Length: 138
Image (cartoon, rainbow, N blue to C red; front, side, top):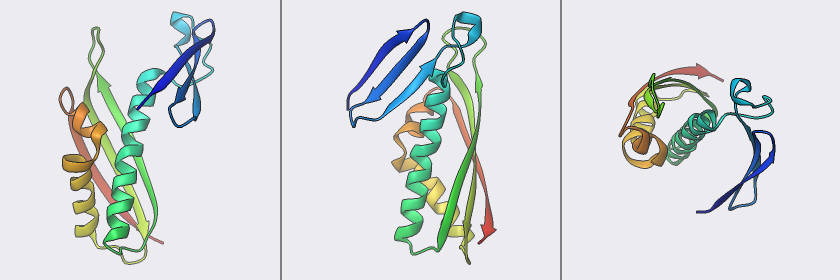
């Protein structure tokens, strides 16, 4: 896996993935940023949610669960001092479908957290990872 991060101006960067997709990254205004993009640690948190969401949807589809939507809302606490690593991450899954089996949804989330999601497994080395979920009828 490769990526490239290039300074654009001030504290604004363009980060490009090896697959050719780009995102604007900026520092907070109090350190010279202009609020033109996500902060780096926000990207880490968003990537974690996306990594797990992909797993959960894939697992539920393989289990032939009638999933129509999946949203992951994340909150993270960070250490007070540098390096300000995540110390706790909470993932709240909102899974929508017709007649979803709650046990299957919980199983998919646990499999993601414990076996498949590289991001949550990696971050669990420094942060407590907690999750909950709700199921909505489509």
